Image 1 (spheres, chains in turn yellow, purple):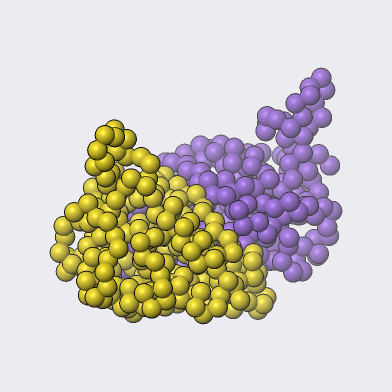
Image 2 (tube, chains in turn yellow, green):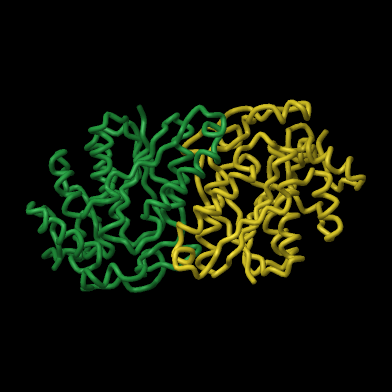
Length: 241
Length: 241
């Protein structure tokens, strides 16, 4: 039983991978180098795939910067210190146009090639409801399309399923679930705006990536902190602030 | 009025672009370098975008070879000299898993960034019915998903439309339509298996691409030849055989 698991190196996709693993799927981990500022998440995704004994981990290069249009890929500032309530109202500037659709399309291609009928994606409709491509109705529409799009689906050999085990969980519930499944959250990366650590006697503040730490102030860091706090679980993350 | 037009440099997408142009859309031409054997089609797509006065032509690099699974991207031989009837039965080995889904996903991302509500794709359900992602039911499912996937769709600012003007046309009808719209089909490329020309006094048989000609025997060349013949229009293409 094989599953393609989309992995961003963050808490949600890592917990989704833990759930896939505990459901006895063989893991095919898929990440994307899409011109994001926070490229360090790809190093974490690689470590996480190894942690779960993934059969394979593929990183696909796609240059979404050619289109622009998001704070994560274009030259727009990442918002800081926003209130949690603020994040839920409207669609954030960190929205990347059609990102999950592109990611799921690649996952579908790989799933068809390796005869996997399941794709796991760690989307969440509660804590980060501003993203349209995290809603259940979107996921169902993608699934329906996927079964019409593919040779395996059209010939009735495979009925593709998009599994979203976290879709109705709060960040705290996700962290609790992952902790039950022994996820090592120190391997995960959330921050949209990685910061150099202030190492003494070093001028290489930006590199290597192992010297980067999470900012603690972007939406993603704030939600992560809040999640650990509400879960009553110690946050293993080093933040700059 | 803006439209993203998927362009492969072939007859169908070029005719779709001609139709978009005659419908008064501003053209945003989108092509993919996806590890295809017939990379020369990208040079043709560039010329075609210029021919139609496209506002912009973007080529996105995506390495589908990382997944394998198709004669167009993996190391599987391209079928030759098949009968037309044979092509219609079953899904051909040249099928690339989820290719149109990936292409349309990128088109959707770009459309959202530039505020275009229309995507043109030159799919055709008649002449090449073996591809599941060329069927009308697939296209409608993608369109529905697209309007749930995006910020612009979710906020009701844009109702995305996927236009498939060729979907019920034969290759001959497509060529007739394009000829009425003054398409220069000598700019287009169909062949899945480009061949070096036998230039005298030259050892560079493989490069540059301008020395490549279309094989005349793969499915795509055979359908092209048949189309021109049935349309009663002179085929401007140079074939090897």
